[in-house]
Length: 272
Image 1 (spheres, rainbow, N blue to C red):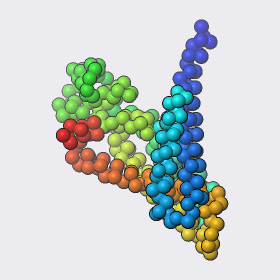
Image 2: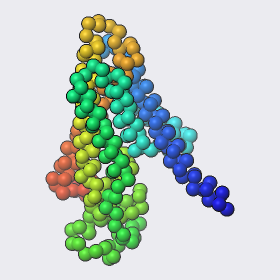
Image 3: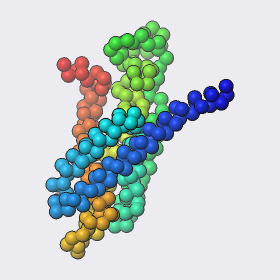
Image 4: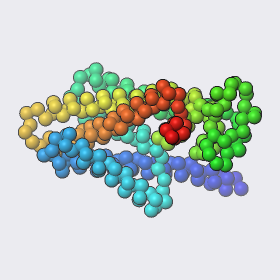
């Protein structure tokens, strides 16, 4: 009986570990595919190769998603986010840092460390869970608030039920799959700080890698894109720049929602 219990308790742990391993493989495959872009299109400028890099990224993730469905395997979005950060940091430490000023090197290292700490805190922190008996069987937010402390009617309206986590969250904004947790009253400020942190970190890496390319390609008329280090630096630069391109509007949209006092789950109602 004890052995059976141990086996049953180990199954969820193995499933979680396998999802993280699958995420790591997907991230590595996406960066390997992206590293082929500067090698195959070395005759194009970085600006011209940017749409090709975006198409390769989308195609790689679409293929990985199809393959996971075919093999009945799932991936962990938080593990993918962390893997991307570690990959960027690894390229910086092993390749880029030798050709940039020490101040930029220290800045990027500190940004990566702070991002990882922030990701841990938001993934395992309390978003604002409240003890309310849920009666929701339809639309989000249909909850029984009779047992909730009387803290004011406007606050009660912001208590929402998350179908992913199966819990009620005070100040519920949305469930963030990338961070593996709900975004609520207790961690919304950390969510915004992390979004800004991602933009700053990726922009800093773009600056550092551009400096590396400028220094290492100086005096070389050809061949820089043909070596492994050059491929990794250019492809990771393209990845970081593409991330900033969508994260900047994403941040602006969330700032607009904050200014208008609109939660993400209320956006559809507001836009109608």
